[in-house]
Image 1 (tube, helix red, strand yellow):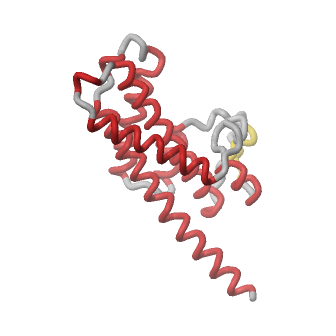
Image 2: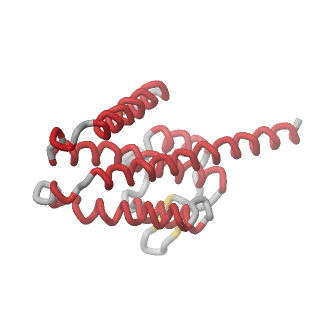
Length: 183
């Protein structure tokens, strides 16, 4: 993924959301399994992006170790502001370190750090388990993806997005207070 401006990202999310709304209002007989799978993948991509951005944002501001430096010794390190900005602009490997940082790891870290409630964690975990179940055999399991799965992913996206926006406001306030104390 090339570097996108905030305006381009907003446009992408708006188009994806509009597509989902259009999909929901379409009669069932006009929904092919392949289009349903495409809608699911698109909405899941939105949710994954928000989850990854929440992880990198929280890891920087909360100061928890988020980059695996030495897998053999299980040594992790925190990230700098420059790394945070780079990772939150494009939260996917190879822009970010450690391709081994899976969505499951991200989800577990956010739950452990109390940045996601147990309810949201369980919901997102269920969504990811379903995605992993159909991922490599989706061509043969197109009928397994239902509108309810797409709706669950969109619900997960909304919850993560709200959490991210809340956390960002909190972190901005914290930074402002720290700057004021220095002055």
